[in-house]
Image (cartoon, rainbow, N blue to C red; front, side, top):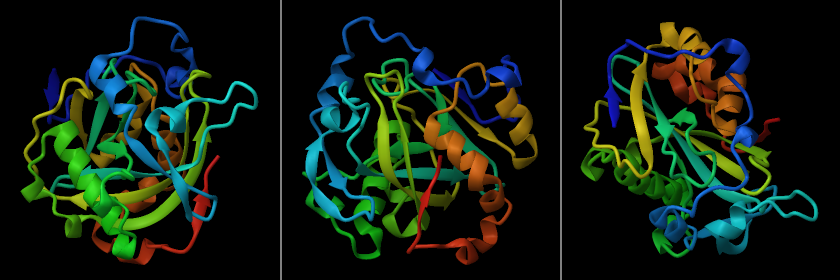
Length: 250
């Protein structure tokens, strides 16, 4: 494990390689990691383009690219952006064991509320999403649940995006954007995360331009469209809330 909270960033890739598609990942390879394969049985929440629940499907079915039409099932997700009290943002590198977009850089946590967990289906005040975020931050980064209560998350907006990844595993999500600014304890799960680091706002462009692995598609889109604006206004995020619009990012 590489665990760095310093602003030193030993990164070596040129800007031209920064946003290369994760489709460069081979389509065939070794047997799936046992823990990751087991997680494919989890039930995601299927939604339509208006984020209305229409059913459920396994994580496997929600991320397989349909070979007949290239489509991926639309499902509900969330992305957490975590900042410490100095205003630095946590970035993680996804483990090579991950089935979708392995060995890529992304925001603190990206996952799904689960249909089989009843309190994660709760839509009032986005409680289901908040509870799922608390669960996954604990699982992936080892943050104690007492440090990340559901009410601590600031829900900003939703984005709709899709990406066919390596042509076998992809994403198609209505993604709830959650911000959290708090100093937390970290104990990353190496099956999920190979590296974590905090990046100061002033070093964002330099850091990203030198990353030696691609970004996840959702992180790249949010970075391109909104992240800098939101980050520059951490203490006045209320004015950027939009809980009615679903932003269609391409």
